[in-house]
Length: 167
Image 1 (cartoon, rainbow, N blue to C red):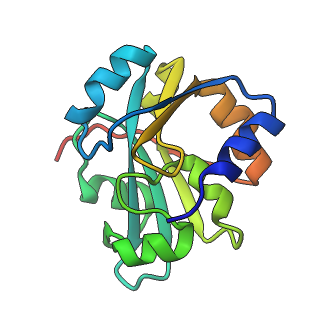
Image 2: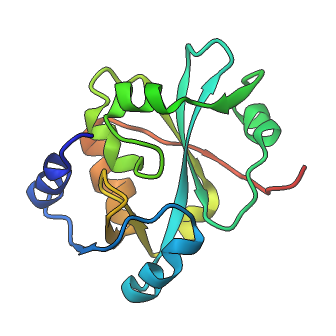
């Protein structure tokens, strides 16, 4: 697994205000509830997706409690069939394992192979939580800093879509 220090160093270099907490490894959205309460912000789900041919890679950010429907996202992106990318492919491209991927991990996508796709409802959250490369720690920051400072610094422009979670 990749060292998360470069992510934290990037946040510091950019002057992004954040709070970092270390905790037991978490594996489900339910495990995150006490951390959300402690930090006063919500996590979004980060889904690593690929097309059937595995020629296009996506990182989808979706509001945590919203149902994910592959067909809805595929249609919004104009992609015939999306599926979850393998743990091996995720490790190869970003150096993280499932459960630890997040938009900060795009720091390691030096070839800019991964397209960031975001649920518009994330913008309703003033602060967001994520794991900076390890699911044994969490960082909380202003949503605005993520989308207006960090991602532009990385050269990443999100594709915004409306996700209803309905079939």
